[in-house]
Image (cartoon, rainbow, N blue to C red; front, side, top):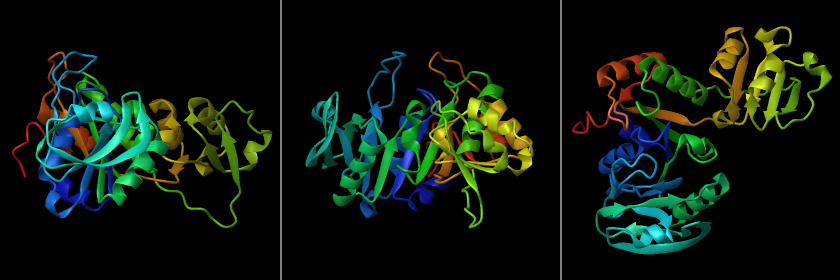
Length: 318
């Protein structure tokens, strides 16, 4: 797949699933089996737990994580003891989880591992800094929509988005909801102008200033919500307004409010941006419902302007 070469341009990658069972682990295994590990140190970890044989929520079988000799991995003490490979323990980090301290190890033989990593952005960043000192040139983080902040540009330079029938069994809804996420990921970076007047706003319940109408640029501290977006959108001359947020993970608005604001000429920009490398799909839901893969890939690709891959169907491609 073309996106494998693209990954090598970055030192950190998040794989983010929009729902359980949309193919995150399949995507991780696909990448690990094709990256040239002998020429680039790779380290993997997860937000929460990944690699278990059976999904604890849906009771369906899940693909296990397979790593090659030389690959670094971070996991809790409990899951380190359950590994199915020979490994060299490199470090015991200061980061802890309910499953014990997080360990960093290198696989001495190929095999299977379960991953369990930090649940906060600062802890994940600290762990990745540790792995870099141990030889990791590419950190791969297995993420989730519920922890979307850990796919922030503050954590990873690049990301892969996984979606599928488990997210929505309706093709039109699936395409629309995924496209909305992609739109936010691809928001443009803002550029400060020397003479601009920017008003800082908070979404944390503080009263909004009465002089908002005197500004055209708003810097939002925290989350951009429907309520805050509505107050800004009600101002005159929406076509001149710009809303700035830290990154796409801080935007919590409905598609309708978001698109109405942009359709009227308003702009939403970000201070940091991750590079969306690829979108992958799993057309099969846990209940057995299947969306036509070719149609899903074609319609989603048309909606987002990017190639879309069904890695299971195309697993034999290089």
